Length: 169
Image (cartoon, rainbow, N blue to C red; front, top):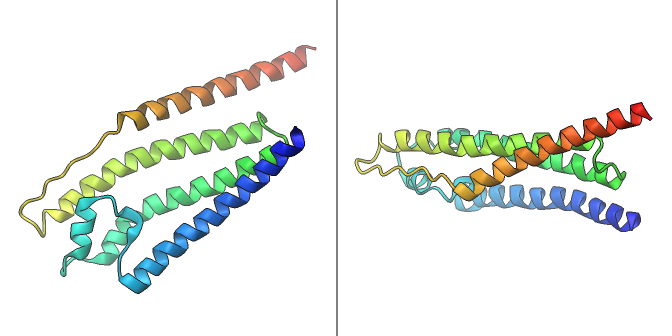
């Protein structure tokens, strides 16, 4: 069974890298070939701004940069987590640290999405009279984040209890 977990962990570790490289390649090819920046393609404000002649496209990419950096951190910490799983460290301090980083990066992405939408709305209002800004607060994602934070807290406490029990014995 442990060998299967190690193989799956190794495959997941390299899948994270491979899929990330594919995504980066897609974004770069779309930018070079089509002149589009598909990282924020779900935002109607971003799309409208990108298509406008007078908009500074470098500024739009700069607005998207924090999300790109956060996604690169997700790749990094996921890779590390699966590396620890490959070493059969499922609840070690190092793997719990990876969990914690992944959860807080998700929280940062949640907040960053709201901030970017506000910034895009403000920038959009400079070029368009009919700026309709909508900030979507996905309650499913919000409660998933709360659940993830709770699970990480429980893992930390359980790990601490386990270490105290080992010291007692």
